[in-house]
Length: 170
Image (cartoon, rainbow, N blue to C red; front, side):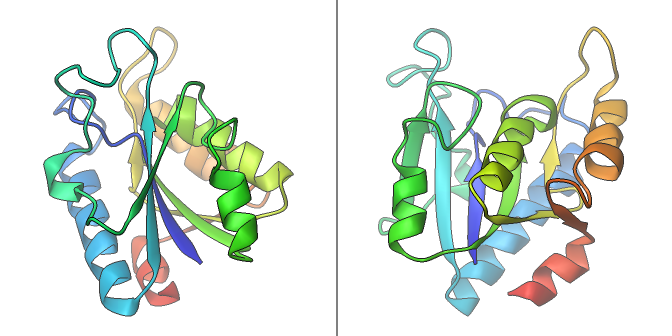
């Protein structure tokens, strides 16, 4: 199993996120636990080439989740962490079959990454309150979170588990 931390970049880890404090605390705990237990942590950064791009303030990973020197970072240009990033090839070279996915944003990059990971044959685990988003023109952030975590993904594309269950998996 690997812990995948998607798009937790300074510019978008803000108080506007649904359950911001819980999200930050949970991710910090998972990162700490994974490091303690020897679980590989892989980071993904979104580079849209405009606002959120290398060299722009806010592009780097949120300080409280910062990777250690030996931890891998893959940059992506579309919603899925698997498209043209090298992540798929890396995971296959390591014979990984299970990915615990965390990060931003529930209704964009997390959704695409979960579904693409599923299509590539990975077992996907989604810990509760370890992904989040902001309000959009159709749904509140809370509605988006609940729709994806409680209805869309579980038992279709992933196994959605409680935070405690996720910690026990390490």
